[in-house]
Length: 343
Ligand code: FO1
Image (cartoon, rainbow, N blue to C red; front, side, top):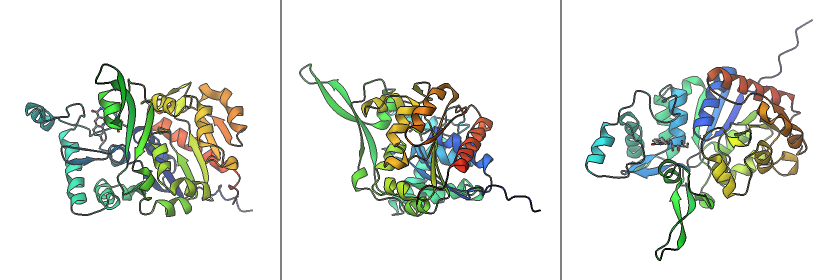
């Protein structure tokens, strides 16, 4: 008697992703599913132009992490980095000085800007840069969510002219890096999202996926901005693939970053179940088939299952690649348990 075939392992896995959390999860996924074809849909709303250079933090974090050039502890920027150019810019008083642009990292921004200025779309630029970093050899494609300009701005309170207070929008990078996400975020706006078109290959990747995984990226300024590009949310709802998401919130707080501040801006509590409700169960018009919470949030499991979403509590911290691989296995396992999503 032939041994039963192993449960068909998903071949085409699509991962909409932000920066650091997503990149760390991806490293685990590649270890857990080495024969999968992984397509990452990268958030580009963090992007910023500084010193005339186009900087794409989430795309670069994904590219450097999967290409082996990331500064591991930081989760952004290059390993063995130096900051000579940055100090020379400071000597000229050329600002801004709050964004840490390293010498090696600058080469990426110069090449990207050169290609963009030559008329190449961001998707082709990203493919060229990722090819240089050997991502294709690892079966990974990185697709920008859009080739159009989308930038997240955060509305904060600021001192008014006559001593009162007024509101102003700052670029997400200024809010996060210069202001350390200290001011209350009254509103988070993905400027340009409403007229942005999904990048080349994005809709097809979602439609043709065997499985869609959402890593523990920021639900507002990473996943939220990807979903804000017209057509992407609908493609996620329409795909026959199951959609399994890993909670970005553990024990009432984000694992890293400022998700609590931007979740508050949209009136969502920083709990695993509140973020699950934000994404919504597929049966009630949302995106989710499966939701993984950390063991600290085991009491959220029945709440999430009440949304019609399969839920499991597993370790969700990623101190190293082994933990990330275990999380990826847990996500693949939950996906395998799910019935095929209703057509
Ligand atoms: N994050 C910081 O907290 N401080 C920095 O000085 C900084 C510089 C930087 C330079 C290039 C780059 O690609 C990312 C950089 N980041 C920095 C991270 C960046 O703010 C990311 O967008 C966030 O970590 C969210 O993904």
